[in-house]
Image (tube, rainbow, N blue to C red; front, side, top):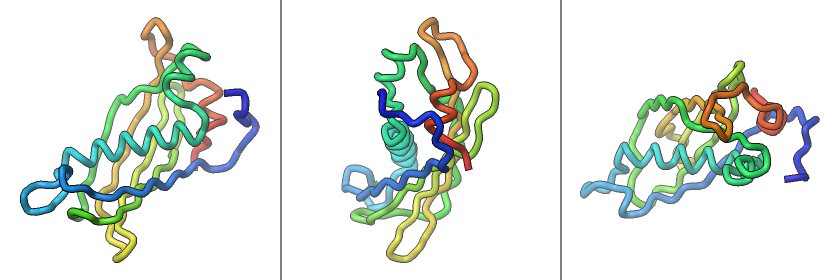
Length: 144
């Protein structure tokens, strides 16, 4: 993970394409509300990977890991089988011991907002104790 740029001050945003597949839907072809939590997790992992802060690497190299503390989801509209969606993920803020990520899932073909969510991350060390937001996360995941 030596190619991190700790002096970077750009705003971190990631857009993840999602194609809705059959097993994610109910019999009516509508995405199950539990699948949105999976999309959020995919988005979190995509953001961490884009920042070169993968879960296994930071745990092994730095002895720290970001863990999900809270998720809030607002279901705005429905997504259906074979919809092509985009999940935008951004870092909203860092406090002493947490980071807040924001998610917006849209359907680009008609501009519909499907879901908005907020996810609070906390940080733990190898003793499973909470720690302040590590500097490498502050610099790798700059907030809006």
